[in-house]
Image 1 (cartoon, helix red, strand yellow):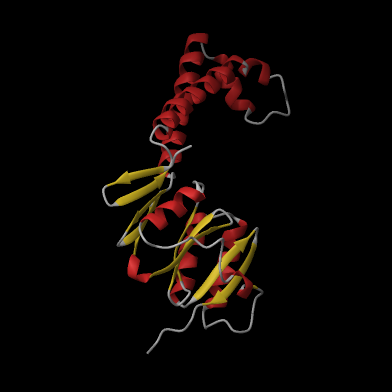
Image 2 (cartoon, rainbow, N blue to C red):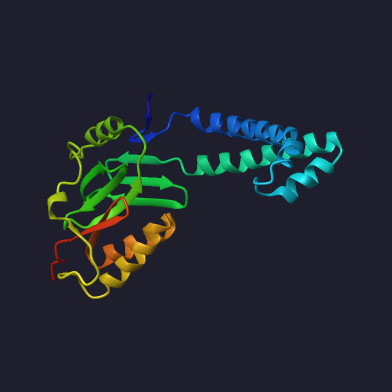
Length: 235
């Protein structure tokens, strides 16, 4: 499935152009079908004492049949449309040019200047951009074609893409009070641990950025955090 698109002096690595419209068309139809189906079995569900939301299904079963079908189908359609809009907004687009790499996904919209970039790689389904002090400049979930990204980077002069994190051997598992962390890092990692348990992507990203600001690079493996330090800034 092709994911590279040339735009002048830039290459955009993204899902094929037809994926967004297909999602916007398919999910509302699936939602409408599910809504219609649930209405049809509402009366049967009211006979299952263990099934949750009994009051809601009893209310639906008491409505006129036409109202049930039209209302259920419309609600399913709207729910499917909302889900489709969210899916489309979360689709990643990586723009590679000779002067910068851009990342856009959901509310994330970052541009990293070429002069700041030392390495771009994919590991554990995440795209990572490192700076010349081995610090993390950007990170985003990545579900696109690695070869397409590697080709785009080569095309614009970034050289070969490393096969995963070149500094993975320096990572240490975080435990509270770990030696070597700068002031404030332990509290941020504790907060990230809570966000990791809840899979709160927004908090995880914000806390990762705060750690990056004090030169702590963090990686997640399941629900465990691993860390290393970036090189200190020159005076």
